[in-house]
Amino acid sequence: MSFPTINQFNFNQKRALIRVDFNVPLNADFEITDDTRMRAAIPTIQKILNDGGSIVLMSHLGRPKEGPTPKYSLVHLVNHLAEITQATVKFADDCIGENANQLAQHLQAGEILLLENLRFYKEEEKGDVAFAKKLAALGDVYVNDAFGTAHRAHASTTIVAQFFPENKMFGYVMASELANAEKVLHAAVKPYTAIMGGAKVSDKILLIEKLIDRVDHLIIGGGMAYTFAKALGGNIGSSLVEEDKIPLALSLIQQAKDKGVNLCLPIDSVIADAFSNDANISTAMNNAIPDGWMGLDIGEKSIQVIEEILAQSKTILWNGPMGVFEMSNFETGTKAVAIAVVKATQAGAFSLIGGGDSAAAVAKFNLSEQVSYVSTGGGALLEYMEGKVLPGVAAILS
Image 1 (cartoon, rainbow, N blue to C red):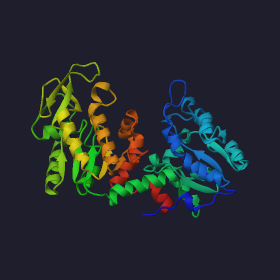
Image 2: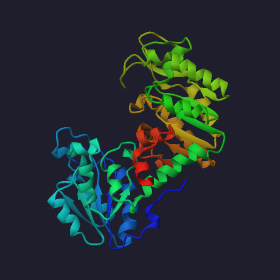
Image 3: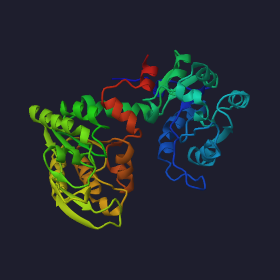
Image 4: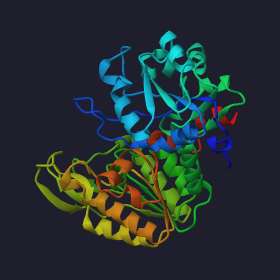
């Protein structure tokens, strides 16, 4: 599948309106604690500036509820953006209106204008056409490079594209996200293994059902594994469980069996008597967790089985941690899986890490550079893999 990208366009004397995902974490002093999303946009920015174009960047930051809120202002990103792009960065204290228009009109080739937080306007998330038209007036060309918000039909991610019928395209982040997702969706080399973790089966039902049609091995970990363990008659103590999803878990087990998929459920767990890093810790078989104890990570036997499966895999999709990896006493399973994915990648496998907590985990263990691709969009990737049409993608392709 080919996509219209900035590669096919010369931006000389053009002003590119780019939707980026600069929703980065800030500390109490408004310092950026992780600039991964900003750095991801640099190749797109450099290509346009090198062509002799200028750039108007628009993004959201956080979830401001009541209009303009100082802690969610993009002004906190200006200095760092100038540093990592080595360009002149101007700031508009509103994303629409006279100030933004004036600054955009007077932008010189090689300069960047960063607009204030789009979500200071309710119209952004409502997909308001009049608001999108005001944004569209700020550029000659529209570039969507924000995969993390491509599953939302917001004004800046979707609606604005209609004002650029001839001049709309994907930036490099969007293009590589889609190309890598397509690879695991339609061109996976077998054996193909999917690792699904996280808290709830309900969050991943559609994706698990899609994957059962495609994969050779489906590894389940994290909190969702205990719903499966209980469905099979096990005692799971006070582990996380979705009682109403027990019939679904049984149905997924049967679907995997019918399609000849190896559904790999954890054998054992690291358990604790409280949801705390300071809790008492023990181990138990997954179907025999004592009352009052909860599973917070996969155990050694489970890790061993997973390592063996990954060692023979040629395509790997990983979405969701194996345990509460944010707590040091329950990070072992997630870390072991991350290392096993890296080893498989070094042996020639293609590995796609599905955004969100999985991306946070490989980053925590400093392994992001050693897998094939780390997605920047958790929710967007999930929906794309489920077969849904992402509004931000459809708006460029239509």
